[in-house]
Image (cartoon, helix red, strand yellow):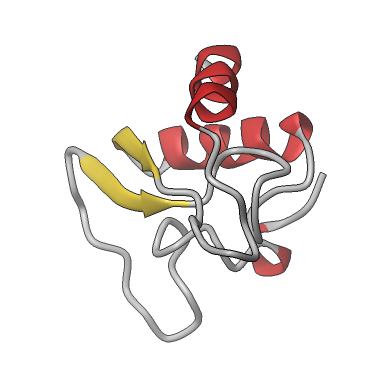
Length: 88
């Protein structure tokens, strides 16, 4: 299992050195590369699940999956829907 230090896509979920953590009751992550194998996010489901665990521990209540859609990263709505279903 990777640490948050090796997962730069865990945006703001883990306080960095010199940054004081805020006491929040809920966080909504509106830009997340949480889906495995689509872009520069996690390579597999294990890492996606670990990211979800970390988000839960940081009081994240909702995550919006925002995979890249470009000539480099093909946008496949059916695949994205399938991956979201598997992660739920």
